Image (cartoon, rainbow, N blue to C red; front, side, top):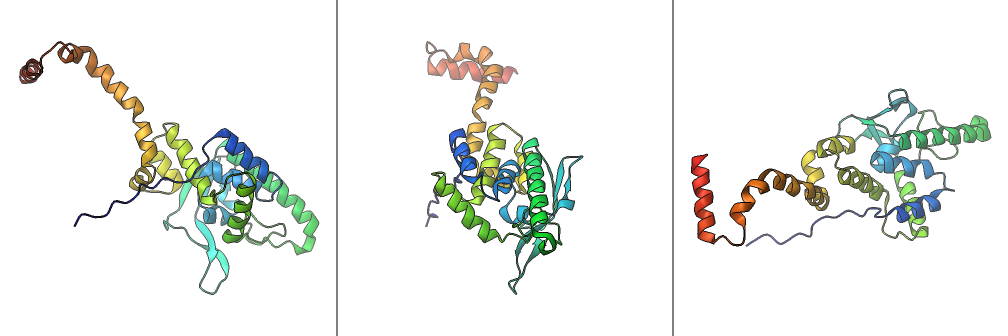
Length: 241
């Protein structure tokens, strides 16, 4: 029996600049605003971003080392563990990502002044609660869902920010291999997951082929030519070459 057809995966993404503005406006007063911008600008997984420490950032070189993710262990304790791919990757940071990090730095300075000795960020996490403790991934998802709903974007999740970043890269004709490295995907998974975009990426390829072939071939493909003559002419030309 033939295998049942599976619907093509198409991730939920932010489609328009108006939707993006609505999301950022709704998130502006949240402590998670820098994190939301950072996820959009880097495409990191939620748990990867929450597991980042300040020592993982090189502001001078504008790079980020993604080495761990934040999640609970079997005892329910929140901590840093191997990433989904179990590999370390280096991400080049955009100006947008750098600005989000600097805003978070300012936030933490203010929070630490308020908390005093109650400040709890011994690990040096970048994205924390206002007392310096790490943010549970599910708690962030809950808050983000509320923000998205307020922005009129029901169905948007933190993972949608990752999908949106990948979409930005591919629609901008960035090489899929570069995008895959940044996202922590294999090239095969990236192309399969975003196949609807890879089709759009091929739009310019047809024009490239026309530029090479059409000036010479169009004479043989004119509507006045009979099918048999065209086939014969093309076949003859092929043999001669």
